[in-house]
Image 1 (cartoon, rainbow over the protein chains, first blue to last red):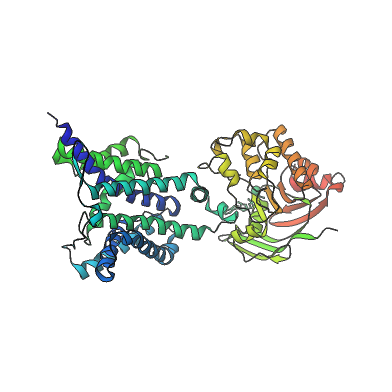
Image 2: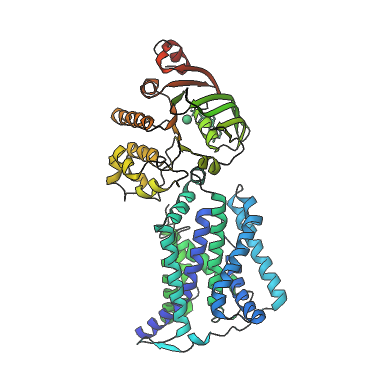
Length: 289
Length: 234
Ligand SMILES: Nc1ncnc2c1ncn2[C@@H]1O[C@H](COP(=O)(O)OP(=O)(O)O)[C@@H](O)[C@H]1O
Ligand SMILES: [Mg+2]
């Protein structure tokens, strides 16, 4: 007999993972849309966001809320530097080069931080204002986890709105289709590409800060997560904004439910769904073929 | 005589290794409508793209209102006041009609207001929320012209705006071009159909194998008909 309350509880907790899937796959989608690059450095930059938050606290005494603003800015700036130096020369070549280059960047970042800090991980305390639990009726949800879902929802919807409903977003969508023509209308497309990469990467940095109090800060936190995130991207459809948000949250929820229904499958359910989606709709649930 | 708006001299252009333009020279004066006629593959589109800065490798001289633009990127050239309506129209499928219309940023004062644009192209007003590429071919062409009228650009490059359209739509586009001339726009127009060209233009350049080989004022077009037939192979 299926315990509905337990399933709902696990589903809700799964939404927290889903929040990270959504934000990370959203960044990947934004980057892939305009740059046509599969950003394999995404997980490492998420990890870097957590490290920056930890560093801000440890070395500068800056707490969680300043880090929530500063760490994405710092990671975004690093992303901009990366785009200018490593990615820019690769646009004329096959996609594979961008993928390999960003994969290399990820290995370097993770390797360096592993050497410095080891793999055991450093704790990052939940900010005092966000401690405690809230009663949802069917479960007690740690307030910090609720906060993560809320922030992620706001950031995802804000990004969606910006891309689909604003003038800036129209430039972005148009440049995704025909960059040469957008440039010939007077827009500096290369700058737009740089800033877009910076923004996508900043989303990863923000996710890293949000993650720090939940999963401790360690150099491998990105590489384990990013594999699931790539599955999410494949399921949602490469480059689809709304698709990555919905798929991210939905898969987190499904993963959580699976823990109750069939615990053995909880870590593989995402990949099973991916395989099914690839068979039925290879462009992804929200992708344009 | 009106002042020279666009002056192209000794323009050469390449796509990768293939050398396409071999010394194109032409000029367009303020307020003129000038066409480039020529067979398929003569280099008309490449000339338009070179003027707009959209061809990677180009040499020679392209002056717009006296400013040398040969070394400028296309976004800088656009900001000087040149706008292109490309041969393939370039309507964006991920943008609706309104977004397509408002996409090109205003580069100078003096562009047409959106209301004025709707009096020229009433169809567009009813389709604002439709996906750009859901419009008919004629409507897409209208949209591609309409969106560059807002920006304040004074020189319009129209690349085969009548290509593949029904006669009644072609007439409408002819009327639009004459209206734009009345508004004071300067227009460089690529055409295959010289009968249409003769209804809108002041002068015609003939292009062959990447070079301008002749210039025919519109009032001489009847007298030069035999020569034109030969150039265009009709
Ligand atoms: N992107 C391109 N790459 C390589 N060659 C091209 C490209 N576009 C056009 N060409 C070649 O350049 C020549 C001139 O083409 P184009 O300027 O489009 O001619 P037109 O507009 O007069 O029909 C043709 O031989 C065409 O095959
Ligand atoms: Mg052409």
